[in-house]
Image 1 (cartoon, rainbow over the protein chains, first blue to last red):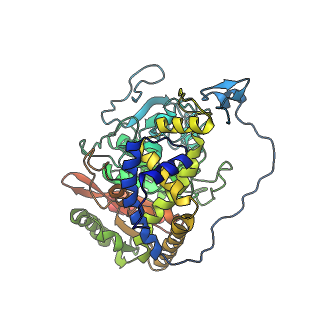
Image 2: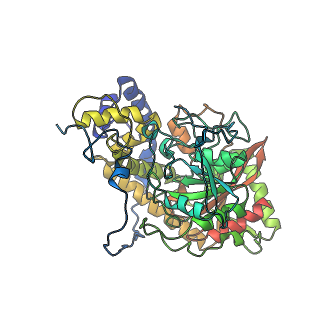
Image 3: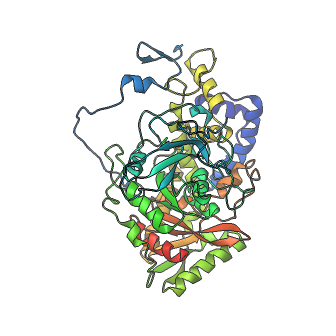
Length: 92
Length: 438
């Protein structure tokens, strides 16, 4: 991929996936920087496949009701609320 | 975006000449405890009940948490008094504290230089005497880097030793909260207070329960074997290496045995770290959509359009860069090429460290390959900034503990010595570091 670095159009596509508005100047600057960074990431191709055991363990607890935030506390930072609910933009 | 330098009563309490704080606010701790009479600065990505927690971002400029992070509860219960929320790179993404939406922090040891990052405010607060102690978080070096650049002590604990509950997440699989202080013993004491399992963070373990790390700061390194990681010397500046080697001579004179080791996998550590950290960040930061918290914009349109407008306004350039690169690395067609390979590299780094610790007790390198850059000097080239993390990120990939302790200076600019231990080897690195500072 080093011979086909991302262009501004591809940066805009990824920004769209990530839900971040970018103006054209930012997209151009990012495209140039991403070319350098992705070129550097290319070296990961040399890494051999490694067999490893994950260190993860299941952590279980009883499903009991505990004290938690009040509805008021949970809503205190929201720009908009209605009837005790968060209010977001319309879905479509 | 301006810092808030008045406390709850409107009083100006600290002479914050270095912009080490985003918000000055006093929270009194309990009357008694191991940290009674100590003041502490808390990095601004740790939730403090009733005191705004900005994460260095415009996105959270007015965010006031309704609860304390577990580590905040623990330091208050131990008697510490919080004096303020420390400045940081936005969402902990950076190594200079220049990406903060609240302005850069200056290095108290050299005010025209960066303090390191991302916990630059925490290190500067301790170095300037604004606080006795500080909490930082370390995802790829963010405690050790500013500790080294400001000439103080910083510890990155074994993964899972300290609770992350209430910390604004950046890259969950890599980050740990860690202490900063002027002495190894004080940093170890603060680690004793914050370590231990937490039912609210399922990744915590009992490795730090009933610890007495402070007692390990006894300077006794007789018979200790120290392996110098040659791969991390090669990329460091000559004057930095010279200062680092003087601290090794010091350890040798106190009875430690110095050897050399090479870890082949480290060549790929920075690449692996950034792919993993950016991928996790792109997922974690999806929550900032302006609905539950965040700026109130006048954006029109459907929810995708409004979210994209809020995120354009709330995030700075480095955060956008990492979200986009992480989204790219995880997107269809690229997942195996970047993310899966980075996980292989991470496992390889772990194996290399395991093999090395079969031969030596601790591993050593300069904490940072360079002296602190001048303010504004390095921001325009993100890749060069990422490469500055070469010596610190391997530790996070391998889930290991490490400490940065002052090794000396180059023309007045602090140099840190990094000592790395095996999993749960906190006592060993604290002991070794206390011999370096003697």
